[in-house]
Every structure is written in structure tokens, then in C-alpha cells.
Length: 258
Length: 327
Image 1 (spheres, rainbow over the protein chains, first blue to last red):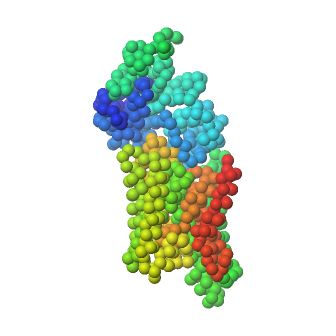
Image 2: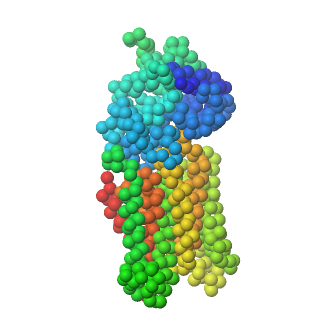
Image 3: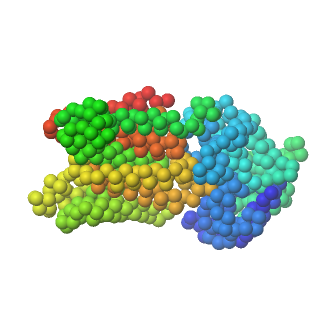
């Protein structure tokens, strides 16, 4: 069980004055959603939390220890990140791609063993891409690649999940399946994981997240439990878009109106 | 590929090693005086005629081993640069490392220095070129592989101009020795042991880094997210590629194409696991250059062709064929 904490964190968005310092803590079992318009700094926030970008100020801690003190390998064992976009370098199969998730767990001289392969296969199956295991990644559709990226992090088996628009490119069924997977990761008995994801879909956020962080384009931010944050007026201000609200299955549903 | 078989690295390496051995044997037997395998065996046992002994021990074996070492150095350097840039077009020549090494070597020769100074100067040139390309491409903000590649191409063109300038102002009696750097010729190589030792050393040093390189091939951010210390690894790759290139250039001058075509050919056949590709590059690059050099000195014997011509003539059709039928 691991806790991810931002302490007086100021993210470094190029060309923008320093916004509000963020101080929050993502506890095991919690699912956080990050909402905000394009360019508000959602990806930058996630990359900063993962230690891939230096913040302008403040620090990120895992279980009370600063990221810098942990070392990249240790961080990679604790924290996994689903990237929003991926680069295809050289040709690789789906199975090989999932297997790289085991990298932080293997010593320099170790080859991937049967257990690693089993974890990768299970992750591919969980994300419904196991039938593509031998295919080259370059031949997959956008949604299949997205599911493979999530399967790779599932193979990595981190205690903290950061996911940058995990439902990108996914059809409706797989959107729900992926959100259910992330919620299940958080809720798993005994070893609940901390999850934070950037989302563009307010309705997925309303249904699956228990805490929300709103990032405004000028660097201001607010965060808190879902029900307190889902104020239609605040959301309309966030996106500069009028919204209509309804309630379905006990959860609010937001629809943009003209 | 079955899951169990995909991780066995040794069969392809054993096949490549046997091919390399066969190429070395072939190169020792053919030439202006043909020797049988029996003659070669007799020399190895300390027997045989004085002529055969001179031919094998003093001329052909050192030259063939040099060719093997240089081919391996170039192919491994190319494979490393390609991983670093995630671009199959990267190669020590394209990125200006060879140009820097050649300028360093030529400058030492122009100053009338020789031997170890030339080697050191070539390495300094290659490393300076690395610093220049990396520093300029990095500039402010993050570098992209395409920006790095373009910077390398421009720097390489700059080195080309400097080389021409140096040739133009150098005294006539030094010209033949200097031209050798630019033609890519193994007949001047003295001892094969330094390049062979470096090749072996770098391959051993790279072995534990293989999986990290696999992850690096997926981009620096993804690599960092999976626990790789990206910056130190990038510098290690660059340093290793510089050392390999400088050694290859000081041994045999500028031989193009090996660093580009060998890793790519192997990837098409063997996949892209660096733990397999890097040692395979050392073996296959060596084999290719041994065969090319054998052709270079026998095709129009007693005249010799620059071996760079042969590598291009052998490599281009093979490469196109493999590319054409790849999955």
C-alpha cells in the first residue's frame, strides 16, 4: 500500500506563470480524476507526479519519501504511468511490449522468466488483447494500442497508478471496462492502490472517481471529494461551456448545450 | 515464436559465430597465392613452408582479424546509435562521429605525429563531435530524435569540408597516408588486437544493459517511467559508440554502410531484442567485412579495391531484398 503526496507542488508549464501550489495526498484505495481544458497542465501534472519532469517548486513524496531519494528503479516499482501518446520505435510484438512492464523488477543479468510471461499474458487477457499477442504493435488500431499500454502498466504491477486519458480511442464498452479495471485496482482487498487519471469525460469522472482535481488554464486549481467538486457552475467555468445536468442511476450526467 | 523458444539467444549467435569462422578461414585461404585448408592447418600447428607461414601469420590472419574487428565495431556502433535515436537511419557516419574521428586523425598526421597519438586524436575527434551534436541538438528545451539526426548530418557535412581543406593544404608527401583514412582500406592496418579487445570489452559491458536498451528504444519518457536512468544511459551509449567508431576509423579509415545495414538486416531476421542484436551485430558485421575485404583484394588482383565499395555493393541489394520481403 502506497500513498502519493504532492506537497506545495508547483508544476512547470512552459510559458505560464506559476499557478497555485498543490498539496494533496492520494491514499490507497482512492481514485482521483483530474479535469481541465486542453493545455491546463493535466499531463504535466501527471508527469511531475511520476518524477519525469522537475517541478518549479515543492515536492512529490511516496509514503513520505521524496521521489528524488527513491531512485528511478524504486519509483518504477511503486508507480506506473499510462502515457497519453506513445512512440513506435522499432517493430515489436504485443507480447514483447507488455513484457517491458517487468523491467523494474528484473536485475540487469536476469532474463524474463515464466512468471513474468504469465503476468504479461494475464494482463493482455484482462485488457482483451491476448488474441493479438503475436501481432506487431504498428499494425494495431488506436484503441488496441491504448489497451496494450494499460496492459503494460498492469504487468508492471505498481502500487500507484497514474493514467493520462486512459479511455482515449476506446469504444464505449472498453471505456467502461478500463474504468472498472482502475476502480478494481484501487479497491482490491488488502492492497488497495492509489489511482489518479486525467479525463475529458465528465460523466466517467462522476461515475468512477471519488476525488476530483480541477485544473484551470491560468494555473489555479481546486480539489476535494467528488460530490463537492461536481458543481455545474464550477464545471461550466472550468471549460467555458454551458452544461445541462441530469441524474441517471444516482450519478449526475453532464451534457454540453449550445 | 513459442514463449519458451523466444528467449533462447544462443542458437542464432552460434550460427553467426560459425559463419564468422568460415569467413575467416576462407579469407586466409584465398588470395594471390591460394592455400588449401590443409596448408593453413599445418601453419597453425607450426609446420608448413616458410612462404605459407609468412602469408598466413604475417599477412592474411592479421588483416582478416582486423577486418572482423572493424566490421564488428561499426555494426555495434550503428546499432547503439539507432537505439539512441529510435531511427534506423542513424549510424556513426550519418551523425558525424566518423567525420570527427577522421579529422582528429588527419590533424595528428598533418602535425607529423604518429602511432598512439593518431588513435587518441581520432577518439578526441569522435567524442568532440558527439559533444557538439548532442549539445547543439539539446540547446534549449528537449531534443527530438529528428533534430539530433539533422544536427548530426550537418555536423558530418562540416567535417567533410574540414577534411577537404586539410587535404588541400597538406604537403604532397603526406597525402597518400592521409587518403587512406578516407578510402577505407585494411591493407594499412597493423595489429588486430586493440580493435578486437575493444569490441569484446564493449560487448561485455553492454550485456547487462541489454534490457535497458530495449526499454530505451521505446522513448526516453517511457524508459524513465520504467525505471531507467535515461541521461546516464544516453551518455554511456554515446561514449561507447564514439570509442567504437574512433577505433574502427583508426584501424581501417572510413568504411561506410556496415553500421547502417548490418543492424537493420539482423533486426528483420532476429527481432529487436538488444541482448541478441548487439552480439549478433559484432559477429555479423565482422563476417561481412571479412568477406568484403577478401573480395576487395581478390576481385581484380593484384590491384586492390577500397573495401568501402564492396560493402556498399554487397549491402545494398541484400538490404533491399530483406526490406522487400519483411513482414
